[in-house]
Image (cartoon, rainbow, N blue to C red; front, side, top):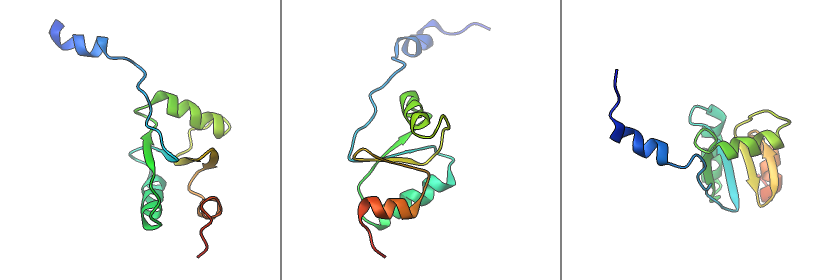
Length: 101
């Protein structure tokens, strides 16, 4: 089987590392994670603006999450202005955002 050399150009020329989005509230997630979906709904219900970064799309994001989660790739993980919350822990999120319910 022979590949079209033109089809390889974009793949080979594309950089491996892309700049990650930035924001005050970042949720590191995966597309298949049910807790990530729940966390997204929770953030939206509380009118909290956030940036969603899929760790599968950004290898550097996965490295960050592992550094915060004892070497494990735990999603969702949040970086809230430097406050790290590993996993969808509603009580910790309420405390960081000063939400009383």
